Length: 155
Image 1 (cartoon, rainbow, N blue to C red):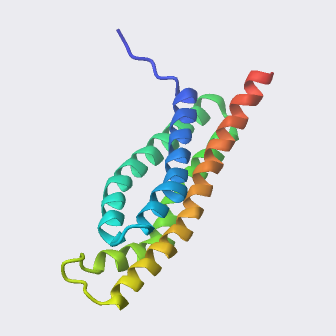
Image 2: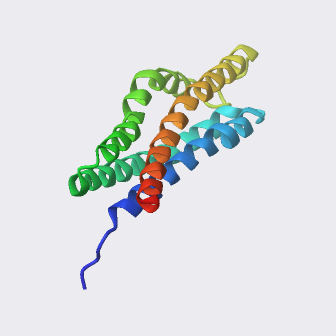
Protein backbone atom coordinates (compact mmCIF):
# COMPACT_ATOMS: atom_id res chain seq x y z
CA UNK A 1 0.00 0.00 0.00
CA UNK A 2 1.40 3.38 -1.02
CA UNK A 3 1.02 6.34 1.30
CA UNK A 4 -0.54 9.28 -0.51
CA UNK A 5 0.19 12.73 0.86
CA UNK A 6 -2.26 15.55 0.35
CA UNK A 7 0.14 18.46 -0.10
CA UNK A 8 -2.62 21.07 0.15
CA UNK A 9 -3.74 19.76 3.53
CA UNK A 10 -0.12 19.42 4.65
CA UNK A 11 0.67 23.00 3.60
CA UNK A 12 -2.35 24.31 5.49
CA UNK A 13 -1.69 22.22 8.58
CA UNK A 14 2.03 22.95 8.76
CA UNK A 15 1.60 26.69 8.14
CA UNK A 16 -1.08 26.77 10.85
CA UNK A 17 1.19 24.98 13.30
CA UNK A 18 4.06 27.33 12.40
CA UNK A 19 1.85 30.40 12.92
CA UNK A 20 0.49 29.08 16.21
CA UNK A 21 3.96 28.24 17.48
CA UNK A 22 5.25 31.72 16.65
CA UNK A 23 2.28 33.37 18.34
CA UNK A 24 2.67 31.16 21.43
CA UNK A 25 6.33 32.14 21.71
CA UNK A 26 5.64 35.83 21.28
CA UNK A 27 2.57 36.20 23.46
CA UNK A 28 2.91 33.40 26.04
CA UNK A 29 6.38 31.87 26.43
CA UNK A 30 8.60 34.95 26.32
CA UNK A 31 6.41 37.05 28.65
CA UNK A 32 6.54 34.13 31.13
CA UNK A 33 10.32 33.91 30.75
CA UNK A 34 10.62 37.65 31.39
CA UNK A 35 8.82 37.12 34.71
CA UNK A 36 11.47 34.62 35.89
CA UNK A 37 14.04 35.65 38.50
CA UNK A 38 16.75 34.55 36.08
CA UNK A 39 15.31 34.48 32.54
CA UNK A 40 18.47 33.46 30.68
CA UNK A 41 18.41 29.67 31.36
CA UNK A 42 14.70 29.54 30.45
CA UNK A 43 15.30 31.52 27.24
CA UNK A 44 18.18 29.22 26.27
CA UNK A 45 16.05 26.13 26.83
CA UNK A 46 13.18 27.62 24.83
CA UNK A 47 15.53 28.60 22.01
CA UNK A 48 17.23 25.21 21.74
CA UNK A 49 13.98 23.25 21.72
CA UNK A 50 12.02 25.78 19.69
CA UNK A 51 14.58 26.21 16.93
CA UNK A 52 14.31 22.53 15.97
CA UNK A 53 10.54 22.74 15.84
CA UNK A 54 10.60 26.00 13.88
CA UNK A 55 13.08 24.75 11.28
CA UNK A 56 11.05 21.58 10.74
CA UNK A 57 7.80 23.50 10.27
CA UNK A 58 9.43 25.95 7.85
CA UNK A 59 10.82 23.10 5.75
CA UNK A 60 7.52 21.21 5.66
CA UNK A 61 5.44 24.32 4.90
CA UNK A 62 7.79 25.53 2.17
CA UNK A 63 8.15 22.09 0.59
CA UNK A 64 4.42 21.40 0.62
CA UNK A 65 3.71 24.81 -0.89
CA UNK A 66 6.24 24.27 -3.68
CA UNK A 67 4.73 20.85 -4.45
CA UNK A 68 1.26 22.41 -4.53
CA UNK A 69 2.51 25.03 -6.96
CA UNK A 70 4.05 22.31 -9.13
CA UNK A 71 0.75 20.46 -9.27
CA UNK A 72 -1.57 23.45 -9.69
CA UNK A 73 0.48 26.33 -11.15
CA UNK A 74 -1.27 28.48 -8.53
CA UNK A 75 1.24 31.26 -7.85
CA UNK A 76 -0.28 31.83 -4.39
CA UNK A 77 1.39 28.63 -3.21
CA UNK A 78 4.76 30.05 -4.22
CA UNK A 79 3.91 33.27 -2.40
CA UNK A 80 2.98 31.31 0.72
CA UNK A 81 6.21 29.29 0.48
CA UNK A 82 8.25 32.46 0.05
CA UNK A 83 6.67 34.10 3.09
CA UNK A 84 7.32 30.99 5.20
CA UNK A 85 10.89 30.68 3.95
CA UNK A 86 11.52 34.40 4.61
CA UNK A 87 11.63 33.51 8.32
CA UNK A 88 15.11 32.01 7.75
CA UNK A 89 16.91 35.15 6.46
CA UNK A 90 14.92 37.29 8.89
CA UNK A 91 16.26 35.19 11.73
CA UNK A 92 19.82 35.08 10.42
CA UNK A 93 20.06 38.78 9.57
CA UNK A 94 18.03 40.41 12.31
CA UNK A 95 17.83 38.03 15.25
CA UNK A 96 21.14 36.18 15.22
CA UNK A 97 23.13 39.06 16.78
CA UNK A 98 20.72 39.12 19.73
CA UNK A 99 20.78 35.31 19.98
CA UNK A 100 24.59 35.35 19.95
CA UNK A 101 24.71 38.05 22.63
CA UNK A 102 22.39 36.05 24.88
CA UNK A 103 24.36 32.83 24.37
CA UNK A 104 27.59 34.69 25.15
CA UNK A 105 26.37 35.62 28.61
CA UNK A 106 27.19 32.98 31.19
CA UNK A 107 24.47 31.25 33.20
CA UNK A 108 23.46 32.42 36.66
CA UNK A 109 26.29 30.62 38.50
CA UNK A 110 28.83 33.09 37.12
CA UNK A 111 26.57 36.15 36.78
CA UNK A 112 26.34 38.07 39.99
CA UNK A 113 25.96 41.74 39.24
CA UNK A 114 22.82 43.71 38.44
CA UNK A 115 24.34 45.05 35.22
CA UNK A 116 24.42 41.55 33.71
CA UNK A 117 20.85 40.90 34.83
CA UNK A 118 19.72 44.17 33.28
CA UNK A 119 21.51 43.36 30.01
CA UNK A 120 19.88 39.91 29.84
CA UNK A 121 16.44 41.41 30.37
CA UNK A 122 17.06 44.07 27.71
CA UNK A 123 18.26 41.46 25.21
CA UNK A 124 15.29 39.18 25.86
CA UNK A 125 12.93 42.14 25.40
CA UNK A 126 14.69 42.97 22.13
CA UNK A 127 14.47 39.31 21.06
CA UNK A 128 10.73 39.35 21.76
CA UNK A 129 10.25 42.53 19.70
CA UNK A 130 12.09 40.87 16.82
CA UNK A 131 10.02 37.72 17.31
CA UNK A 132 6.95 39.78 16.35
CA UNK A 133 8.36 39.88 12.80
CA UNK A 134 8.73 36.11 12.61
CA UNK A 135 5.25 35.70 14.04
CA UNK A 136 3.87 38.06 11.38
CA UNK A 137 5.58 36.05 8.63
CA UNK A 138 4.20 32.76 9.98
CA UNK A 139 0.71 34.21 10.30
CA UNK A 140 1.04 35.66 6.80
CA UNK A 141 1.89 32.26 5.30
CA UNK A 142 -1.05 30.67 7.10
CA UNK A 143 -3.40 33.47 6.05
CA UNK A 144 -2.41 33.03 2.38
CA UNK A 145 -3.01 29.30 2.72
CA UNK A 146 -6.43 29.83 4.28
CA UNK A 147 -7.36 32.22 1.45
CA UNK A 148 -6.36 29.60 -1.11
CA UNK A 149 -8.45 26.93 0.60
CA UNK A 150 -11.39 29.32 1.07
CA UNK A 151 -11.43 30.32 -2.61
CA UNK A 152 -11.28 26.67 -3.69
CA UNK A 153 -14.15 25.70 -1.35
CA UNK A 154 -16.18 28.74 -2.41
CA UNK A 155 -15.83 27.93 -6.14
